[in-house]
Image 1 (cartoon, rainbow, N blue to C red):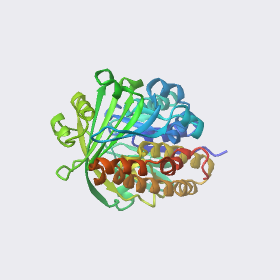
Image 2 (image 1 turned 30 degrees about the horizontal axis):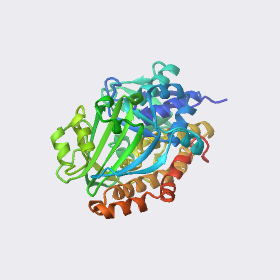
Image 3 (image 1 turned 120 degrees about the horizontal axis):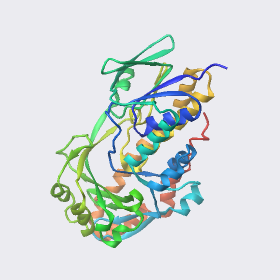
Image 4 (image 1 turned 30 degrees about the vertical axis):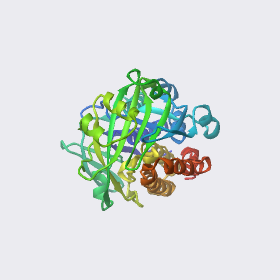
Length: 398
């Protein structure tokens, strides 16, 4: 029996590490190259709905995730100034009953650490840090990855999981068109015990308003509240997640909002800001023996909370394809066919969701209630979300 291909992965983010773990568990030899000098904690919270948690459980990570994540009791929507609350959907046992897996809130750094440790447990030298990937060459069925310090790595397949500004993608295709969305995002972490009791409940909350919205949910087993606020502005276009802002500037983006919103801003440890850039999803993800994965091929706005999960789905499906097909080209073609339509639908749907969260009608107190009752009616919520959560990357046709 022929040996399985040696797989190179550019990028040790959530998608790259998921692909590495899924492949290692199937007996592939994998090497991951990451530009950071070491894999440190970064970012803030992310939401892992059933379509993501079932894959992490499938990869043997359930116990680790349950120790670090917070299982959501439900999600709700609140009016920006009155605080009036509308149920979005129940989670907890309801998520397991309806979709076969839990809904988790987790710190991005915790998820990265769980994935990293699982990869290193299977191959202790699999992750190469301080390795900025510049490009690749392909010859005679082999791919050579070029690293900034002069090193070269050779393998049979290259997975480009190097993010929204992917250098691998730039070598393969024209970059997707990008558009500033007129929105900046704020993120921060807040010690849960410092907040009013109403803000400490184990739910995800979406505050919606005429020119912005705020998302909050617990992470770190409920010890920390993750805060993300979105405000309409056109004077800031920096896309880095590491740009520090001030509490005063953040609060100024939410004038007249409920005191709870301003309480959270005031108690945030350090607010960070970045501009939201929309990009058209690529329809071609592979070329030769190279495949794009995650944000490298389908960067999405955060309004459906599916960006990280899409990368996890990609990694699982790509591993299945490489394990199923004897020919690398056929495997990558199957991966693309299985994933492009869904990823495109999520990218488009995320943009539409943002418009729903920012609606001028919410400025009027009476009209706002009617709008909420219409837009978040149970049948509409099921239509928007069930297809996302029902998807199973371990079983989808390839």
